Length: 239
Image (cartoon, rainbow, N blue to C red; front, side):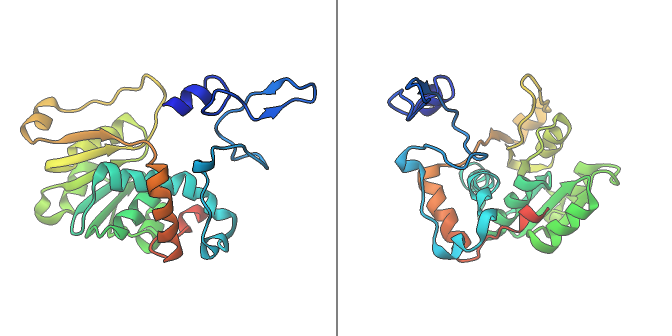
């Protein structure tokens, strides 16, 4: 929060001052996102040296700082996915695909991908670790179909919503098993509301948790090492 306050609200770094100036010497205030620039000024502890094996992967490694980073945080720090778990991922976009492959890396036994695009679902199953898919455009009841693909039809241990849509928000919560968790990753327009069945959530002890990014200083080195060892890939960017 302190960085957001200094940077996004005031255009400086942690000491409140910018590092660049205009030709006349006046300060040039900056925003934290420098992905479209050739150069960017960032705090020293916000930079990480890529292993040569990862650097050789080229510009696709940019997703380490966004889609893959967000997915890793959702799986590790919010979903707490463990070996043998059953999970569902609502949304097979850039972040959703990476949620799937990180769940695979963490040992999830069943990974159910849910989307409206048949091609994305096929790719999710062929390359990203999905063990089953549900096409929401073709399904008469998405929640029932997701449940049917879980052991004993009990529901998933963790459902990841990676769309930011009230419909998939509701579906994710209703797809969880007793004591399960729904992790909300997708962003929506400010003011968008998601509904839940209060009685079901209370009686079945279902948890709903938001997840935004990951812990940069802790998780980035781990992610780079996972890429180096090919535990995760950059294939999602091809979609």
